[in-house]
Length: 427
Image 1: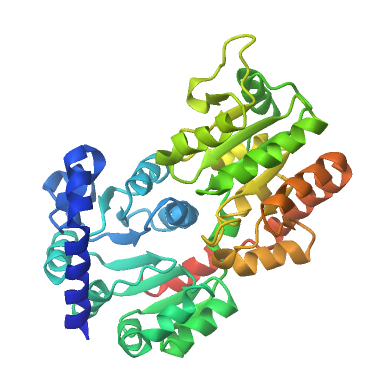
Image 2: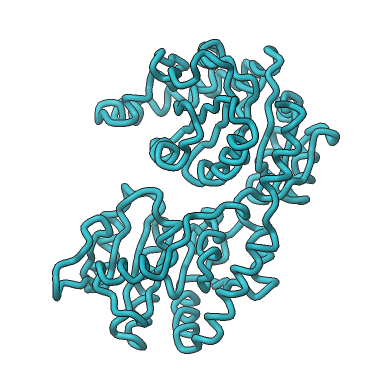
């Protein structure tokens, strides 16, 4: 089975060769990291470890990096002598790790899941423990760790309802793969049940909660929020619709909702943050097609008397704090079948939150928010415009939504402490 998996992976790489060569030819972070992806780490890549065996934490991209940030901070405080290495798959994940994870002594790209690449990586890093964030199940990597008696923990684990049927198709293989996990610390009971159904040993599964409930960004003082508004030319008291982590097809819906909002509040502003920065031009095109001028967050303060109604967020890693600007917040990846994104970040600021019907990746979280009146789910693009208008016309309801979201967040914290207790025996 492992041989077939590896052959399939090689065929996938072969099919992707033109795109990989194109990305390599463009240079930048992808070219710089290609050696690391092959498991070849230069001495300077690992110099911060001082030759010690680290705790290797793998977080595929931005969301996972942010999810484990609080855990790494707590681990560093409890065991300061342990070096930490963080790996990611994406370039944006690396950028956020560099900015947010000062606790890590080394940052690298995760190797391709090919036996030769994995062998080189493990020989170079020599981890004492591996933490995989959420659902990073790489069969050859897990097998190699098992052969070397390196404990591997799935931290903040989840199996979404959307991915579960696909995993079940590979259950005979996955049952063997999952035996190489030492411990599975799952976000919720449903995640634990799904992993058990896929063949993970029941005695290795625990429910520790969602680390993202413990995630706190630096609060935004009222004075800083006012300074941001001034730099953007936004008068105090006007409506600010902030659309975070949007995907293709959602910018048009958000712009339509904003155009409707401007009929109620002509001074309203839209702050638009596409999930992938390379899509900024598409987001801008959606706004300009509706006759709306755009400015970039990175170019503030805007010149006097030049205050565009739409502000595009063109930086990485700032969205969690920027939600504080939103008097109404739409969290993307939910009007289109992506699976949704983190609604806890706007909840920390007490924002009234809206999301669409596609929240499979955050199903339990979304259900909890809806059950407690802490968010509004809209059925589609027209529903988004209607909900935005309704909340703009009923500020008391919007305030209640935001307060309920902040209160729910406080009640569900504690996953970091439970995860550390579970890890203690392995450390």
